[in-house]
Each structure stands twice: as C-alpha cells, then as structure tokens.
Amino acid sequence: MYRTPTEEHMLCVSRAIKSMAKTRGELYFEEALKYEALGDYLNAQATAVEGLRLCMGPFYLAVRDQLQDLLDRVKPWTAFVITQYGVQAVQCAHA
Image (cartoon, rainbow, N blue to C red; front, side, top):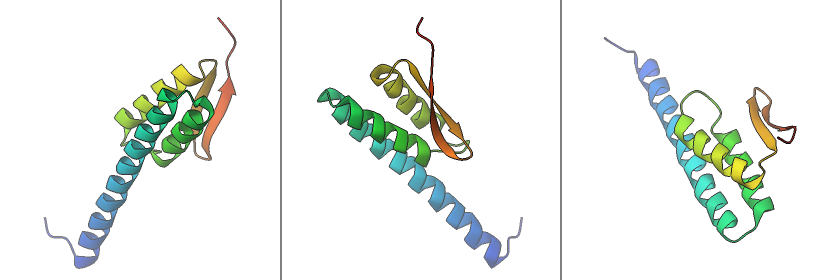
C-alpha cells in the first residue's frame, strides 16, 4: 500500500506518541512502587494516578492494570476510573 509522505509522517508521529506514553506509564509505575516500598502511600497513590492519566487510551492495558493493582493495595476502598476528563476517584462501600 502506498502512503503519501504526509501519511508516513503522521504514522511515525503516532507511533512515537504511543511509545512515549507507554514509557512514561512504566516509569510512573516504577516510581510508585518505590514510594510504596518506603511506606509513603500518599505519594505512591499520587504517582500511580498520574501514571494512569498518562496511559489513557486503549493501548496500555498491562501498564494500567499494574498501576490499578498498586492503587488497590495502597487505597483499597477507592476506585480510580479513567474518563474522558482524566482519572477520577470514586469512594467504594466497605465490604
């Protein structure tokens, strides 16, 4: 299939953006794990939420799942939902 130079450029830019978002999400996950290991749960939560925000979209499910699992450990009674407006916290009822 032939692509015009503009289409090739847009495809290259799209790949670069996806790669950057994935890398950033992974970096935020690693930082959140470090905070969790130090017992700094507030910073672990903030870092994981920011990582979730950076991983919005259908491509980074593995990174998002890891960040969500970390948030479930740090703040178990709060669900973090990704919406078109960003990441929102929803308080859950205790079991």
